[in-house]
Image 1 (spheres, rainbow, N blue to C red):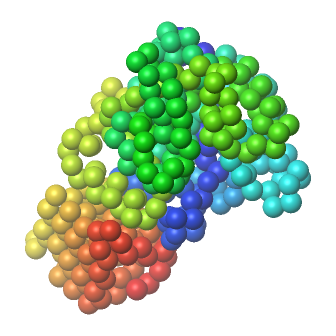
Image 2 (cartoon, rainbow, N blue to C red):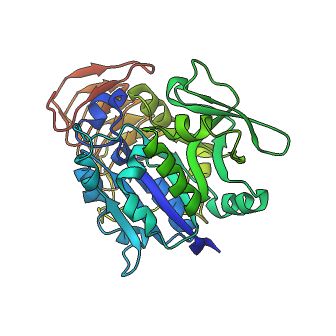
Length: 372
């Protein structure tokens, strides 16, 4: 059943609200949860549902994304026919001066010839900046059963920034009775921006939006056509994190310290795969302390770590104290340094005795390769 589905992931956005975290990369290749990148979740969702063909729409700043996904081998998407395809904006750059995609319909128009050659009847559109474990088989089955034109996946527990989100009001039959785009406050179910629709409908929508110079899926399709199209809403009750700001990234990271959240995100029958890196196990020194933290492989801990997430290869030297922090790969916290509410990007070095303090609502973010 599931090889009737084709996956398309929008991986072109570099969200400026993520400041230091998206300087060297786009949003979907942000490291998350100790050993993953955000893109891993949507790729794994698709593969777990039996999808064998996935197109990744990239734009600027996608070097780290390419380094991470490679040929798609780690997700079993390295295939002779189909598999993972990276779709850069070649045909699109000539059409408009600045070359940036203004929205999802722009991005789809930029890869139009790819869409025409899709072998499957139905397409799943999804963003790459969402950490969630979706039962896509179930969602597809409910889409077919409902007879809808489009199925939208939503969450009943909104966590996004309303000004960047869409919201659905759902009637008794499970269809959208009202749709609100980017309001000042949340109303109804928040869209996770995952949509299932037929290939033919997708092509006709792209044609319509191109002809009317409409760049946004929310404005051009959901709002303009909500009365012509039957839009079914699937409400996902599990955990879902959208990374839309530095404080949001920090809050969603800290939620991973809750075992219930981890149980909803890492479901044994739908594993989240990532790029394989064989690291040695983490070494804890004789005076090391680690409380309520997620610590990846290959770390060296001789100081104290509390309520924190440490990626691979992080070093916390003797006398250093780290609490409520997210330390990305290769970060070195030297002797006697103290960090509270800090996010360090990859390969940051904090000199001995330094004291860095952020706040839970305004964490301190330190850019990649900095020495503090």
